[in-house]
Length: 157
Image (cartoon, rainbow, N blue to C red; front, side, top):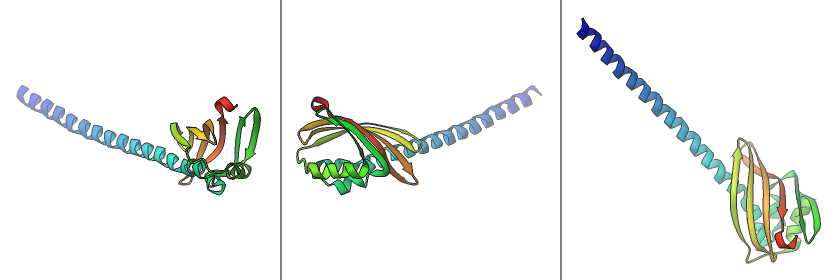
């Protein structure tokens, strides 16, 4: 009788181990799927910023405009003058500024929370200036776009 209890006990331990391991594997798989989806969102945001980044070099205002929602605003200052522009006016300012062949950029960080995100991009030698741009982005459907931008022009501020 004690042997039967011991065998039942051993069986329960093995069964519990199998069930627990399966749950752990499922939890691990779910966690990895969520991590991959999160990683994909960072890449999608980097891609959404590309028209803006490319336009820094090319001076293509129409291209930069594609990165922004219609309601977007851009706020910052250059040379002590504060600018508060809608997306269309900002696109015109990019075109008026022309190309900056030597501009370099670095995406310093991206922070995502569901369909909302923020990003910081550093630029050097954009029209002879250094800029730090802070973007607020929103994902509508499968598309990320810039909802707003504020910037610092560093020494030219």
